[in-house]
Length: 152
Image (cartoon, rainbow, N blue to C red; front, side, top):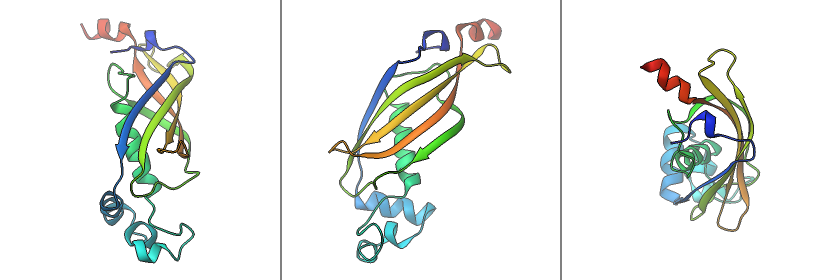
């Protein structure tokens, strides 16, 4: 497990892969984003997407799953303090195999919680042809080793 003390600007991490099926896309959309281009392959052909496309929020959820399973194991888990930006430059399609590449952009001690640090990270989600399907810039709260001493 990595504590804030171990995190440096420029640190990189990777995660995945995860493959997305049409059933996954339709199932997520049915619960959370019920629009024709996410629910019906035939109806989706007549839309801007020209075919079935995953909800951006589905891609974001898959990205989170890959972050948690990544090679950057953080003490205390991945506690988000907010998202500065999220974009979906290309849609996630049925059959896509996604992976992530992340980088620490900034790292500072928290002004409100001095036994924790804040890391600003950029995570890029790519498909099997290295097309970017999502970019995310988020702030994570990470405990310091001193936070353990505060618990004892």
